[in-house]
Image (cartoon, rainbow, N blue to C red; front, side, top):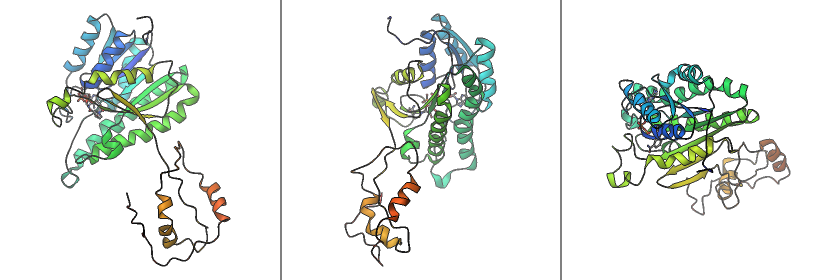
Length: 318
Ligand code: NAI
């Protein structure tokens, strides 16, 4: 169709593209004119083992459909080698999709150091290493598109996933900062939190649910965010089962206190309702103006003396 999004002449690196979501992205970009680097270590979903078969299979699929693709079998911890594959074969890199991932689910009580370390290495260090290697090319050509893959587990917490949640939310902070640093070079960086059927989720979700969560339904969001027409950056999106939504931070209007010795724990307790009141919020992309607010607070009268914290209205602390 004449109106379809195309990526002709661009090089797209997809990590963990030997299966699951990464495979869907790679095949899509391959079908829309891009040169695709199909990276996959070929490990199990717990991060054990390695092999070239997974990446090779996807490369063959893309090529036999008439697309351009090369395989790379490095772990994302060796990001330079993955980006080097792009440069050696296609002379450039335009889009980086940090997608590779594994799980080591275990309750916090039973977690081993290795479970924590491996999750950090693949998700956080891996995404960092790939971005670090692509960044100089993005800056030099004043063009780049980067996607980080977070998770609902990172955004909201998830039983048995302290390691994975920590790593996934780390990628949010990482990407929000990259978005700020990349802006003047037309490097746009966004976060997605997908939900889709894959070998990663097939052990935890029933078949009838998985049936409704096709991994190819995450592709349109990634396609739009990585296209040259996009202007969106520093954002978080949820996608899954035909639903897509943007998430943002919300800050309550909060309470102000005179910065003197009347600013006691009791004074906060007395205004707790205002601290947690979201009826008049803002949606910041930076910290509150602490100094400006301090100035405004200076003109208040001292907080009334309240010796005992009073949660009269039974405010629930959430
Ligand atoms: P998947 O297990 O099907 O695919 C992940 C791929 O990454 C595999 O092919 C694996 O071999 C590869 N990989 C693992 N470690 C690697 C390493 N060190 N270097 C290079 N490649 C490596 O899983 P799925 O579901 O496609 O996951 C893709 C991403 O989406 C992951 O980051 C995952 O954490 C994230 N995600 C997935 C959700 C889902 O519902 N499927 C939910 C939330 C996040």
